[in-house]
Each structure stands twice: as structure tokens, then as C-alpha cells.
Length: 336
Length: 197
Image 1 (cartoon, rainbow over the protein chains, first blue to last red):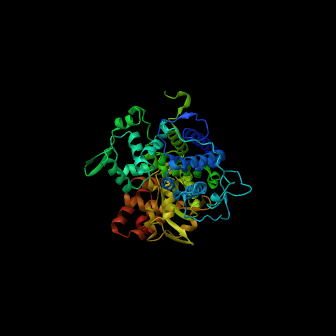
Image 2 (image 1 turned 90 degrees about the horizontal axis):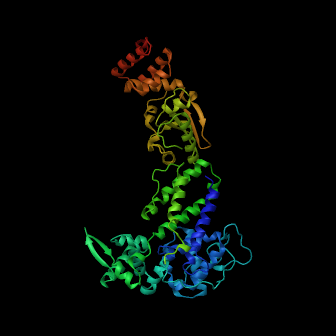
Image 3 (image 1 turned 90 degrees about the vertical axis):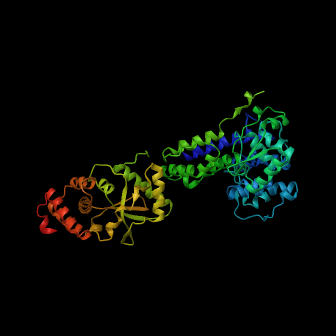
């Protein structure tokens, strides 16, 4: 297994995916695919902060987009999407950068803003020269001062990928918009508060309270089976409200889990000690990685070879990446 | 890295090399004393396959210590190798560790054959002489089967069988054991067994 080749190819695939998604959401770029799913903005943003370390232009366009559309984002969800310290540093730097340009209480951080010593370059293979951006430097990341390009636009709320923004425009940025998006898009007759909490990355208790409110308002229905409360939604009524047919509702994907898995794989593939390890240790590490990400993949409905030996693991890992990134529709084949 | 669960000499070698690499990653270092089928295969004494690697003891600071229970870091490295190669979790086990309780044949460590699997793992394979001791004891204890077949494959001489028989009596001095032992010795051509055990 040539890990460098795998990592480079994965990085290219993920950059293509991220550019395509953001281009449909208002970033200044041309989309080459049209997504049939509703995207999860915070999950995609945290994912892109890692992926775009290999493409400073995407990184800076993402910052510009976040500044332009800051009111559509949940800072709390951004933080909840973090799976490790690297995510937390990237998100904290981004929120601080936004807060410096758009002073709002929700963007204010209690963290120490002093520049750390021994900064790590933010962008892969590109040592920064000149001044360091203070918001990134405070998180130990070295990059030149980032300035907004002012090229980003608001998302097209009629586009399937932007259903979440449309619901946020209707219901506000919060749990209610998330649970309605999930219940409209998921192919399931009903959902529990636990499943909705995991999918929306909100605390179960808060999700339960939001569901109770939505049920009281008649926006969703609740019934109890075997002592468990189950929630269901009238997709036809909601589709009519959104001026869609139920069949035109976008599909659901477990983005928080899937995008976390993809950046876990990307970071794993860049470990220097693994690149220099023996062939056996590399394939063994690949199998162990599959073992590590299997629960998230299982939750997201991505099949994995449970019995893959180390020798079979590289192919199994490639298959996982393929399955997550599959189902993208070329833009020229857009359904009218 | 095929998923077959039986081990021949080459595959056992591959597994121990993999175990050595996993231990090195964990910065752990072991010298294992291995007996049984995998040791016979490693020394080229039999041609059959086996299903596991039997650890008799661990050499620690020049002293043999019981392999039961296997240390957690060794178990974890063994678990990873099992999953890597599609093996049962007990492919590396301390099954014969009780042999250490009543003592090994005199000169066991000096006769053992040392093999290194990287910097983190050294294996001491029980010599042919010592395997005759263990296989005779096991054949008497468990009757005809794999141990008896191995004992025959080792083609022990009468003095070797008698030496092994005397050692085995230190592990089981019962009359019942002695009677089966004598029958087996006779069957194997050691006709003066009763004078020695």
C-alpha cells in the first residue's frame, strides 16, 4: 500500500467534493455536480477546515463565505462537530476570525488570544512568511493574515442542498430546523429522540424538548410504542409548504459522522511514522483504522467488510471512501 | 496475509515477525519460550500444520516466569495480529504454562534454539530433546493422537525416551500414570522401561 499516493488521491477527491458542495451553497466557484442531498452546514464547514489545508484558496473562500453567511450558522454546532484537538483549534480560530470582523456576542470567545510560540503551518507544505494571522496564531496555527474576498453569496434556498438554510430561515438557527430537515429527508417512517440527537449532534434532552414543542404545535406527530416515544412528520404537508412534491425532497446522509470519518482517514493517511513503517504495519494500521471508524460507518449505513484482514484492509478502506462520496450527480444532468 | 487458520512453518514465522513489529510499535520487548507444534515446525522437526503458538514461559531478567496469564501488552499485540491475519484470538496462548510449575528438564534453556523477530521479540524454541520430554508426557496423559504422532515423528532413541520418562514421573508420580507410561515405552521400543521408571 502506497500511503502517500492514497493520501494525495484522497486529498484531491475531498477537495473536489468540498468545492462542489460549497459552490452550491454560495462560495464563489463553479459546481461540477449537483447534490441530491441536504447538506449539514456545520459538519461540512468543520470538514472543509481540515481538507482545505491543502488548498489555501478554498480555505479563504470558506472564511469569506462564513463571514457573509455568519447569521445562518450555529456556533454551538460548529463546536459540537469537533472530534479532536485539531478540529477544536481550527474552529476556535475561525470563530475568532469571524468575531474580529463581525463583533457579536455569540462569536466572542473566552479563550486566550495571545500568540502561541512554536506555530504549526496551517497549510500543507507551505511555510508562512511575514506576519501571522493573530486568530490562527492564538490556536498555534501559522498563516498569513486572512482577509475576506467579498465574493461569497447567500445560499440559493431553493436548491436541494440548501434545505437546512431554508428551514433555518423559517424556524431559526437551532434544533427545530435540524430535526425537521432530518425527518423530512430520512427514509424512515418514524424516528426516536435518541436517533435525532445523534444525527443532529444536539443533546438528547434538548432534542426531546424541541420535539415536544414541535408536536404541541402540530408540526410533527408523536406516538408511544413499548414505552418509547416515536416522532413522525407529514412529508406531503411540509413538501407543499416548501412548494415541492414529496419526491423532490432531498435525500438524507449522516454528514456529521461521514465527514468526521473522512477527515479521520485523511489525517491518518498523513502520519509520517506510518508512511515510513513496514508494509505489514501499514496494512495492519489500515485494518485498525477500519475497526476504529466502523461504529460511525454502521450508524451512517455505510457497509464495511467486518472480516477484512490486514491484506484486505486497503481495498476495504478505498471502498469506504468511494461509498461516502458516491451518488454525486453531474451538474449537466440536473433534473429540471 | 491470507485468512487460513492453520499454520505451517513459513506462516508461523510470518505471524511471529508481525507480533514482533506490533510489540516494537508499543515499545514492549519480550523473550518467549515456545513449545508444541509451532516449535516443532520452526525447527523443521515435523511437517504438519498447527493452529496456535504455545507459550510455556517468558524469560525475564534471566529467569523463566509463567506465561499464565500473558501480559496485557503481549495479549493486545497478539489480538491485533489475530485480526490482521484472520486467526482465532487464542492463536498465541499460555496453554502449556503449567509445565513450568514442577520444573523443566535439566539444561532446557541451554538447549533451546533462539530466534529473533526484530528488536522487540525473541523466541526460544524448545529443542528436540525437550520436545520428546513434553510429547511423551502429553501422549501418556492424553492417549493416542497428535502428541503421540509428534513423538513418533521425532524418532526418539531408547535412552532419550527413558530420560524423558524419568522427568515425566516428576510431574505425575501416580501408579496409573506409570502403568500407561510403561505400555507406551514398550510400544515405542524402549523395552527396559520398568528398570528406569
